[in-house]
Length: 476
Image (tube, rainbow, N blue to C red; front, top):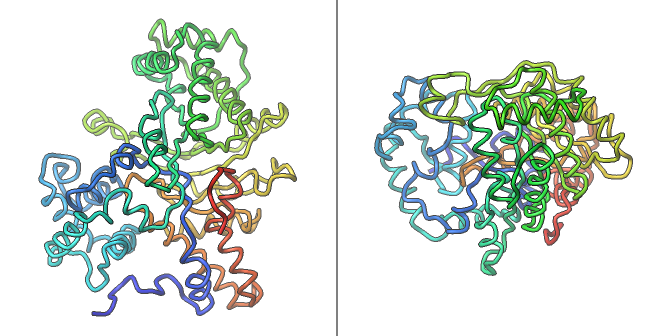
């Protein structure tokens, strides 16, 4: 039967777009420099039992949609069977029209499962379930097999400083697996002074992981540095920081020390002013560590998290109760980067904003701190979370194109916990080629496929290889 929805030319609305995608973008490898895939599953080469385990577990995008469609929680995060959860998802899918999940769902059924002749619905759920589950039992559909199928050459996970990195070492020591899997240093919990009890537990884990008794702010920094060193030895070359806003308050050493002790020793929450001073000091020190090792640092900012208290208490974080935040960002961001630049400690930096109102802010901010030596040193990151859909990707590309250099962009990432999410690279590439192909058709860009096609390939892969400077990754 013919493809019913996701065709070869899906999203490619002109002849030029089709040629850019099929001749230049489609075959490029994937350099996935930010994901949340569990390294243990890669180390152990997990074979998933069924489609729910690989597709629905941990996917708060889908859970939000299911709740909105009236699906009870037990079919999202609860004790319903895997088949029951999948069937509820199949019942939800026809209600997703114009939601990006409708695109992603059918793209992920197409690749790698080869389903192109039917849409997911209650009527097709059983046959799709059985077809995919048969394939998932094959070696090509294990965690490693899927990475190979998707032509991934490098994958960066997201890891807490207290992580032992044992699974990364296990992967690196296996000569049968050529794909590079590297950790990313994400020290967000070091800034989590809003919850003194959780902060103390985490600092004690950091003390154990670093082998250093943490007694004050200086020893906290030294423990973080030791783990930073350990991550570097394990191949890490990226840090990531998840923030609501940037922190760039003035502070004294005494104020920062007092803040640490008030939270860690006395178990008392900080007032907002003192908390901001503590976070300003720590974030600056962490950024300096990143610069000293020539890492790339990433900042994901603008998320308003855990808005539903009862859901948070019942289900925990990252379960689908977050929103776009609307805080002012520009002034503190400028102060933060200026402090680093004045110290000669501003390393390669990627900014991911969650509020689309900040697109032009970020696109102009990065131009303030380019150094004239490293191409695209300051990056406007790809459209993130609520924005990684067609409109959000187009708006990010337009802002970067108009106020920066799209040609220097390091491209897309998955930012996902699912081994099926690598089609997000295909989704991005199709949208990128459609934009450029439309410009060529309208005479806004030259009708020169070598010129435009080379830029497409750079954005899809080569720019990232050059930018992150990770040894052993080929430039094709």
